Image (tube, rainbow, N blue to C red; front, side, top):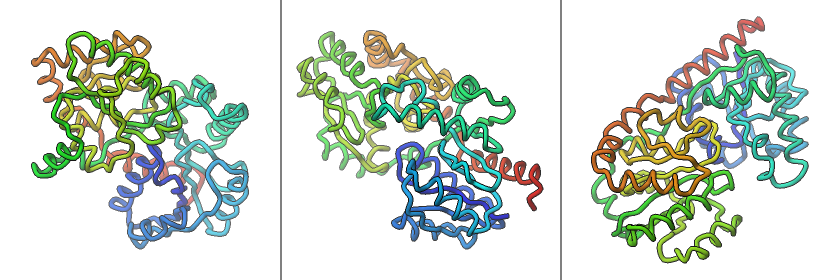
Length: 374
């Protein structure tokens, strides 16, 4: 059998993590199936290292472009593909073979005000509806996302399969002391700090996090710092304005992008990791922090309670005081902090990319058998 997987979003935040780990584990598990990987020119050499049964093909069409609606189906025909997997919600109508599509979340439908233009909500709704109905199977990453997909698109429940994400092994490994010292000195981390890591889009709720930090700073935690890690902070001037409106510019630091090796150490150095997102399909950063043994404070909405279980403090992300109180509980209750430190890695260990790839591979097999593909 020959399976094509769209790998053009290999380096995107979230979806890129999903694609990278899925391909890595498929390469370990399956030496028989031939995989055709549609990719950017820059990723061709990297993907060539996966194994002899993985063949990268450069696809110049950009994701979400009109060109891909024709280019991808034509390439599928030329490469004699039997099954196509789109790891995000775009499935061109002209795709001529059975397909599996992964819909990670329905955020574009729940928060259309955060999309870049008026046409974007229509585009998202149209292509997600088509992908959900036209594909042979839909994969998603949490029970919360499955409920949203069923609510918005009215597809049979047994068509949608939940396969949880997992975290990179590097977050489970204890870093060398010299690396920890280097990171501490590089960023001058000599005071207790609260850490946020993720992208900085509006639904991540960073303005309310900054307000919560202000409440802590003025009520018993004058030396506490807040570190925010995430790309494209310059696109969201309201976040910096929030810092200055509360006069916190000496206490809130924006670090931008940091490599995973550095992030793994920052998790371990933080007193608490806080993730007050309004909506997540899965929510990898809290799980990464838990694997590192860092106490986590996160939202009581969408998939986050499903991911963290009873191993984090859950708060109302729409209430800055609730966020502040959750952080305060961890900082002032050593027993609670120790309990979260001990149970967090156990919870994170329940999620496995190998298991995710095995279940995805089983879905490929089910679709192939149902459609009479050898």
